Image 1: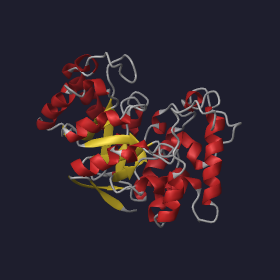
Image 2: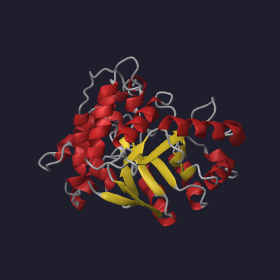
Image 3: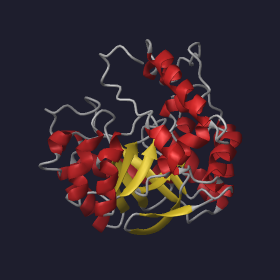
Image 4: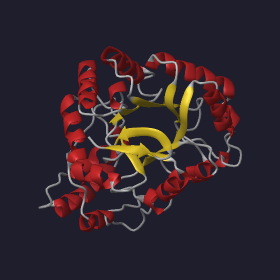
Length: 326
């Protein structure tokens, strides 16, 4: 396992981290035994960065992580979690008020819940789970978090980008309001490379990459006939013709990888890790086999400049839908 600096912060993290959404639920059937085995094997293979959230099974993911780390005595593992806004629009509406969605009393109460679920007295990284650029002129929630940080309950402070406006956090980075950003960056979604990732490098903001497999389509395992369990959020993510279009795009990537020695999943991880601003990538790991497959990618050779450039050609501006092409 290779390790990287977390931007300007005095910590080194495994470049392959553990994405802990699936062990909390919402991805179809998931046994707790498999979850514990996945996490334990990932830790054995050198993973020292875990990302979770309050919303991953209403604290279930956090509780599994906390229990596992206590039983193993792993005190040097860096755990990032997230606090959602109060109930309402997701992502927040431009007309929402920051103090209504992230009021101080609520943030304090939610942080206490995160500490209890994880079984710790200090969070390594607390991220707001979504944002809107409407709040950038007066980002009061981060002022509250800085106060709580000074009280000793928070290490670093960050934000997870809203899916359809990831660049909304750039002003926060430049203003010094946050220490880390969790961003969607993959072979299909390359917009962060236009500015966000470079700004992270300039400001010393740690970058955590999520959705590196585009919720599974970039692993090459799906076909147009793939179905998902009733409690699997991907039923909605790939609704309508989205799955067929994603598979069609993914097959073009498969063709470009022929003879390179990389599987689609390996290339997806290496693509995200190729940007120097990226500190860690957090694929989901639902069992020990997935942990093995993801972690071993750290030891593979980097993508050649030629292959990296080829993969850049698969950038998919999904909002530009009206041309009729997949």
